[in-house]
Structure formats: structure tokens, C-alpha cells
Length: 459
Image (tube, rainbow, N blue to C red; front, side, top):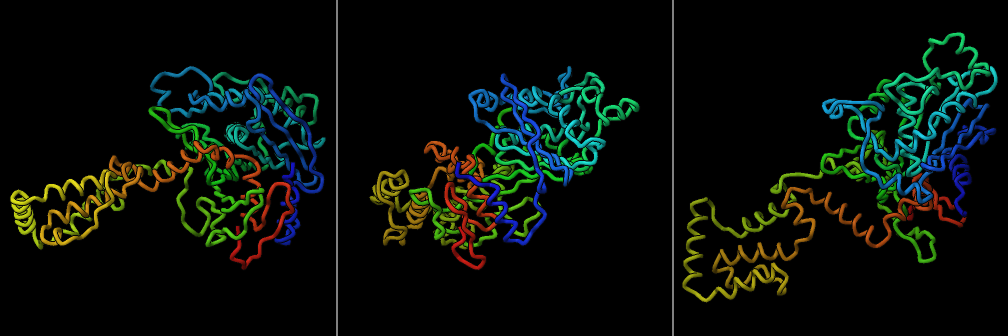
């Protein structure tokens, strides 16, 4: 309630003087499929005017869906028996996602083939597949199946065993009779195949993602975009761990929620991004670079001594206080400093410095008269000063984890612990973010307002 996607879309068309409304003027609901045990569900719409069929998979909304989402184990994408060597190289997918899609896929394909107008074929129609959350994962699997094998209604998901004749379920239709006369014909394909997902989790391993990418390169999939609120935690799961590999399919489209929200839920347009165009980023297409936080785990590791890492900055702090001009001078200065410390009462100074690094005392100023006289004290102090400012992500860099990656991961963990992480995955957050990406302030239950193109108050 209060989320008016149709109104937002109409305003977008009006603002950009567009008349080619997706779905035409006759888009109608055809049927709904639901499996009680697995929770797999989808709705199908069609436009005879535009020869378009839309398949929309439902996201997580029932307890059984949470069971499906929580599984992390993988099974072969193509069902069958495999050797251990084969299992290492074949595409594998999330066991829960496959089970849910498998429970409704065959019936969905049977009804899809019968959705076209009398005398027409599915090959005359464009097929658009979409879904949010769990629905996005099911949409990904369905598109991969149709892209590789066509709309094979003789079985559910891909299997090693031969499927039944795909046309049997529609034998009494024009398309079915034509197929029966040419029984050797392969399952039909739609005129075009596109996928637009929202907040989809990862579906399969890197082999499955490579298969999906290959199908895109061959033209079997015309478009595949995953629209993601950049703060959405669900798009970051399942996490690759141990010997379980997960990777996303399709192109990432990042959108950003408004940065400020009033206590009553209204968007604060005064809290803004410095450059409005950065609220929408498309992988491989946008004319500016940014880190894809949904895929950045692939660059999570780097050398512990790389620029920006804690060890590198500690070395720099030490080096900047060493006045030697050569390695020999450095050794002589170090020996002189040690000799002086041994013959003085500076032990308490060193203890104070080390305590400040451990947070036991306030950080010691970087330069004192004693430090000017003794370079070793100055070096201790500089290093201790940097250590006193060390963060959790600094410590992560010591064991080879990229600090910017660790920063983002820590923010996600904090968001999860505060109960805000899942909020970024919900429909109202996507509503606000998508509205913002096309130039509107869209808030649940509020009038949709256009943002001024030249205003600094873009939210």
C-alpha cells in the first residue's frame, strides 16, 4: 500500500516525452502458479498488441521461502549422476532455488506455450522475466534454461534423462498440432529473451555464471540486468566460503537510496549526492567508474604492505622520522639512539608511547624536545601515534584484506546488527532508490515529486 509503481513509470515517460509504454495498452494478467510445499510462485502477463509475455516470480514472503533462502549447498544445474571429477567442472546452483523452480517450471512452460493468440507461435513474442529477492533467483534459473534449451515443456529443469515431447501439453492448439506434425523439431524459443531482476541473491557457482555469460555472448539472452540497491545485504548472499563458490549472473545496475530520511518517513532532499548522475550505475555501460560492492569480494585480498595498508603506513611513519641519508647512517643513528637509551632514564617515555598505542593513555604528541634529541624515540612515537588511530579495517589489512573492502563489510555487519540491513532489501527502499535514479522523490504514501535537473538538492 502506498507504493505506486505505475504512477512513477507514467511520470518517467511524461518527463522524457516517451510514448512507447512497456506492455502496451492491453497488458493483462493471464495466470498465477503456486506450489504449496516449495513456495515457488509466479504470475504471467501478456500484451497481444506488443506481442510481449512477462513472467514475474514472487519473492520471499512466507516461512517456507525463508527455508529455501537459508540453504547454501549446491547441486548440479543439469540433474543426473556425475563422477567426482565431473562435479568439479559442471555448473552447480543453490539447492533451495533449484528445488523451488523445479516444482513449477514445467507447468509454467506448458501454460506459456498456450498463452499466445490463436494461430500464433511463442517465437513471435518477446519474453521478459523478472522477480525480486527469491523471485530474482528463480528468474535467473528460468532464463538460463530457456536460453540454452528453449521452452522445453517435456520436463521441468534441465536433466540428463531425455524429456518427453515438449508439445504434448498443447497438442490441441494450433501450435501444438503444427509441432506434432514435425515432432523432430526442437523446443521453440521466444523472439527475444530479457531478464530484469531486483535484489537477487547469487544463484550458482562460477561455472554456472560462465554458462550464463556464454549464453549472453551467443545472443540467446538479449539482456540480463540485476538492479540492486547498493546497501542491500541479500544481493551479497550466499557468501562464497570454503569450497562453496557463488557468483552473480548478468550485469549489475546499482541504485542509491536518498541519503537523508526524516523521522516521519519523508525523504530529506537537502541531504544529497554531490553528483546526481552517480545514483545510477550500469556495469560496463556507465561513463564513470565505481566499485561494485556486490562483486568486490573478488578483489578482497591484497599485499599487507601495499599502499594504504596499515603496515605500509607504519613503515612510512618510521621512515619519515629517520633522518639518515643512507642505510649505514640509519644503522649508526639506531645504535647511537640505543646506547643513549641504555644510559638514560627514557624507559618511562617508551612505556608511555607504547601505552598510547594500546589505548591506555592519550596519544603522545608526535614531537617533543626529547624526541628531537633521540631519533629512536621519535620513531617509536610516530609509529605509536599511527597505531593509536588504527581501526578494525586497518588490522584486517595486516592479514592481506583490502581496507576499503573491509570497511564496506564492516558497515554491512553493523547495519545488520542494528536491524537496518534487511530494510534496504524491501520494496519501499527500491521504490525510493529507483525514483531517485530517474529524477523523482518517491516515498511510500507520498505524492511523487520531480527533482529539478539543475538543482543541488537531488536526493
